[in-house]
Amino acid sequence: MRYTEVKSYCNFFRYVSLILCVVLMSLVFTGCGKKEIKYPYDVNTTKNAFRFETYSQSSVADSFASNLAVVGEDIINGEEVETGEDSYVSAILIDTDDKEALYSKNAHAKLYPASMTKVMTAIVALENASPDQILTFTEDCKVTEEGAQLAGLNPGDTMTLDQALHILLIYSANDVANMIATSIAGSVDSFCDMMNDKANELGATNTHFVNPHGLHDENHYTTAYDMYLMFNEATKLDSFNQIIALPEYSTSYKTADGTDKEFKCTSTNRYINGKINAPTNSTVIGGKTGTTIAAGACLVLLSKDKSGRNYISCVMKGDNIDATYGKTNKLLELE
Image (cartoon, rainbow, N blue to C red):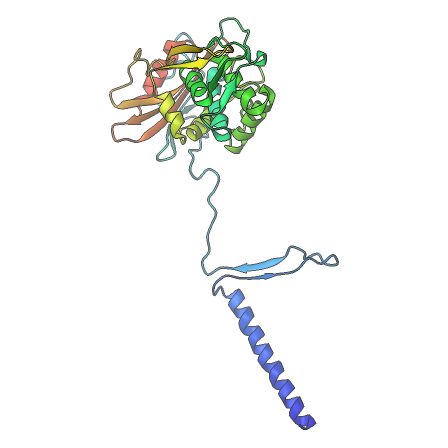
């Protein structure tokens, strides 16, 4: 073949290669399917992790709060009781179906949650252990605070996590909370680290836990809005919803010497144990109470209206139990 013919063929192949290159790049940048060009790692270039991606369809990522109600300023309906025996400090009512706040007062005020803390204790326990895991009560689980609600367990006593969660959420036993924490995480402090990590994951950034039960500590606090975030997460767990709806519970656990010991308890939630009636338009599913001198009377609640819509309410630092349930009833009337 003569030199001129070879040169002609070479020019032809260069032309074809150029056309193919142009077609390829046009496909990449005009969005015909997804194409990706990666640059391999090169120590001598600043484009180590550089890549092109194109899509035939664009999309926008959902925001963190796309499935949550966002509460800013107070939303007040009617007159408010600021002081006295009917007063409270903070409250919210959230329509969880529409993700809308129907009422809020001081929703982001940092307050003591008392035993509402056990909502997060249950979340962390259910996410990190199986219901049939055997828990053992140790000396580290003892609660010595006078007047604290206790199941009366002794070192060496054992029960399943499922049993413990029933006693935790229905009877609000503080010694059981410590047993759950130490059995799952090895220590109360390690379990509280897990609680705080989960709170941050849920966006409850005005919350800090130092124990799994809620007995008073000035560094242990949350807000009504954060309680909504945590309780909303808890209600995604079927076992949690089943437990908080029970008016009473009975079981038997193993003592240190291997004998069976019976335990019976009644719900601390006055809606569930029948001491207080909700408004006729509302059905209470369940919730978690919390009461200490510093926290006042607290209650977080899941309820439904006549059409089956779901609501979460929370009242914190009621002057007394009657004030907290009275305010909760007023919130339920707004459903």
